[in-house]
Length: 275
Image (cartoon, rainbow, N blue to C red; front, side, top):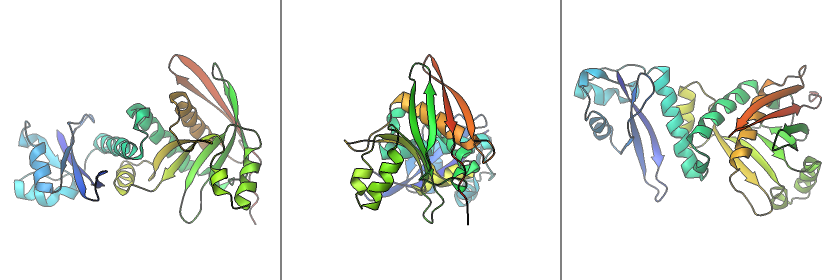
């Protein structure tokens, strides 16, 4: 069985115009090449090429077109929703300039971000409290970690600073109004963004965190994309942070980067005391 789904509207990068993306996904989650069209009828008809109509169903968002073409309407299975979420995430990564990390990393970030989102560690710690993060193995090093979120505008995420004492420096710079200097501190991070809407909606429909995980790297030269190893470290750290609780303040997360196995150990400070 093939399931026809819609993704969008997607803002085109070279203009202010938008389009929709139409997907044909099998029961197992395999998908055909996406179709870009502005109208549902054109998108669905393009997806019908090469398949038997009797083997196709449309998601409820395409009900009007389905009725006009005599196609059944049904809620897609989880595999189809997961495939759409993966495609949406990678499309958003392409628009944000981080697609070089690869589709496999995008999937791992989505999984880790969902664990982090469900655990909501920012409810126990704030962004001024340093976490001790130790990476062992061939790429052994230490980081000073921080979790953030819970504000009115969201902004959830995690940062790993390369230098000990970086959080104290960050707070001082922010207090002095030196925002640019604060963002030049060497670090790797993941932010959970509420944009673009098409990606967030696809992730939520697939029962993932309703946020786009966006890996980034900061330093004196500005924003850049983390390396492959740094991306894997971020994924492992997200998962470790998700397993922390006020009564379980030390977690080790094992990971594989290429042929090397590493472990990320995270030790949390005492939880924040609420008034």
